[in-house]
Length: 157
Image 1 (cartoon, rainbow, N blue to C red):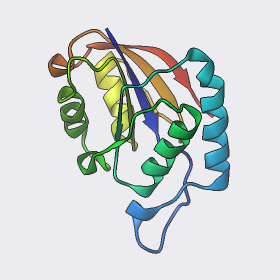
Image 2: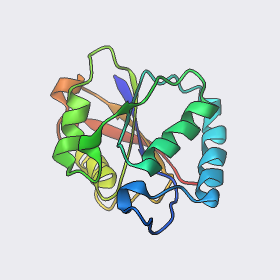
Image 3: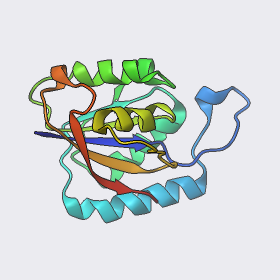
Image 4: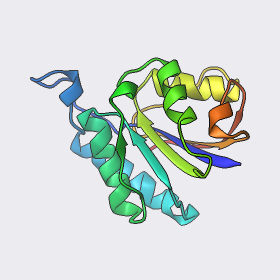
């Protein structure tokens, strides 16, 4: 079994002059996410893969994670998951090697919330900014399908 950490980027500015893709984290978003990850650090996360949308806000969120959890691998910047349909999120996860045991995916709503709903067959999941959902995946990544994971923890800033 593997662990999947699905993370919605931390709280952002509502707009950016260069468009949505360039929106940055707000100071309070950085602070709240930093505080949450410091609390969760006691669980001794050992991520072996980090998949991140190419939006500024998800990269900034990943950088906070990497600062607090120093053994976190380099992020695999994945443009295909920027505000993507859940099918693209599934594809990104299904491409993981079978050796991946602890994977974090940092993305956007509604995609990340819908992904959790499909993987766990639970309804009404709505991640707020900076929320971390921890799922236990019961199958190999290439077999990932609806209902193949269990939501074990949900942490919001």
